[in-house]
Length: 587
Image: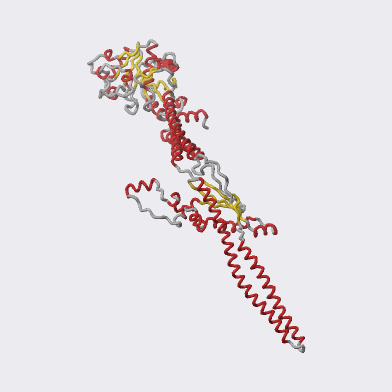
C-alpha cells in the first residue's frame, strides 16, 4: 500500500512536470476561450393540443404517451424545409454574412494567399438550408405535449428573433393548412349539396305528380307507391339538411381557422453564451492537465526505474544516509553567480547542514580506517556534487583540518576553479611530469583549504587522462602526507566513469537529488563501487536545488498564467456583457 508520505514525496518530486501540464492545459483553454466566437441559444416552446388524445384520456384512460407519432410529426414539421425557407425569406438571411458565408475564415484566407481569391457565388435559399438546420434544434420535452425550439447564433438578439420566427412560421403554416383543408372540403360539400338539392327537389316533385294523376280506384295501391316516394323524398331532405349544416360549419372554420398548437413561451434574450462553456472548459482543462502530468510522471519514472524520492530508500542498497542539504538560507551568496558559499552566513541553517555532514563523515571515516582521499560522485549530472565538495572542504578547514580540494572538472562552467576566480595557469597534470611542485599549484581559498585543479581552465587534459596515468598514484601518496583530508570533486558520470579514479581514492561519498535519477541507478552505482577496494562511505541527499528550481519555475509559470488569465477574463467579460433589459416578446 502506498503511504501518504511516499505519495507526497512523489508529488513534490514531479511537481515541475505536473505543474507544467496543468498550466499548459489551462493556457490552451484560455487561448481557445479568447479566440472562440461565442454562440447564444434562445429557446421557445410550443404546446400541441390534441383533441383526440384528450378524448381518449378522458373516456378510456389512455396515457398521452401513446400519441408519440402525432408529436413527432409536429416536430418534423418544425424541422421541415418549408418552415426553414419561409424564415430565410422573411428574415432576409440571404444578406446575412453569418448564414450566407460571405465572411471568410482564416483557413480560406490562408489558401487564397497561394491560389488567389476564389469567385464568390451568390447563395440561394436552398444553399442556406444546411447552415440553418445546424443552428436549429427541435425536441420534445420529456413525455409532455410541449416541443422545445432552440436556435443558435453569434448575436443573442438574432438568436431570439429567429427562434420566434420559426415558431411563428410554424403557427402560420398550421393555420394555412387548416384554411386550405377547409376550403377544399367546402368546395366538395358545395357540389354535393347542389346535387342533393336537385335530388330532393326531384323527389318532392315526384310525390306531387303522383298524387295528381292517381285515381280513386287505385287508391290502395297508390297509397303504397306514395308512401315509398315520400320516404325517398324525406331521406333526400334529411341528407341535404345534414350536408348543408356541415357546409355551414366548414365555411365558418375557413373564415376563422384554429390551429392545434399554441405558443407556450416565446424566446427571450439569453443572459450568457451557450458555447463555449467557459467554466466547464477551464475545469476540464485543469483536470486533464493534472491527470496528464501525473501520468507523464509515472511513465517517465517507470521508464527510468523506481523513483528516488527520499533518503530512506537508500538503505535498501546498504547505503548509509549521512545527511541532507536543505534549501539555502537567506543571505547566502553565490560565488561567481553559480557556487553556493554556505559559510558566507556562518550561523545559518544551510552552513549547519554541512557541519552535521562533516560530523557524520568523521564517524564513517573512523569505521573505515580513516580514509583520507574521498571522491564526491553521483549517478546523474547536476545533483550538487560541486556544492557539497566545496562547502564540506571549508567545514573541515574551519575545524582545523588541513584540507585539499581537487577540482577534477575545472573546464566545466560552474566549477570550483571558475567560481572562485582563482587560477595559477597550471594544474596537477603538470605535477605528474615533475615540471612543477604541488605546493606551487595550490590556490588558497581560506585558512587550511587549498584548491588544486587537475588542469588549468582551457586545457585539453581531461580527468580521465589524469586518473589513468600511472604517475597519479604516487602524486596522491604525496597528497596524503601533506594534507589531513583530500576531497575530489569528480566529473558527472556522463563525462567520466566514476570507477576511473578508484585506484587513487580511499572512498566515495555519493550525492543524490530526488527527481534527478532513479533509485535503481543509484543502487547500481553503489554496488559497482562497493565491489572495488574503494567503498561507499555513505550518501547525502540534496533537497535545496530541487525545491528552489520548482519554486522558481512555479513562480514564473504562475505569474505568466495569472497575467494571461486576467487578460482572457477581461475579454470574455467585455464580449459577453449583458445588454440593457428589453421587454419580453409576446406572440
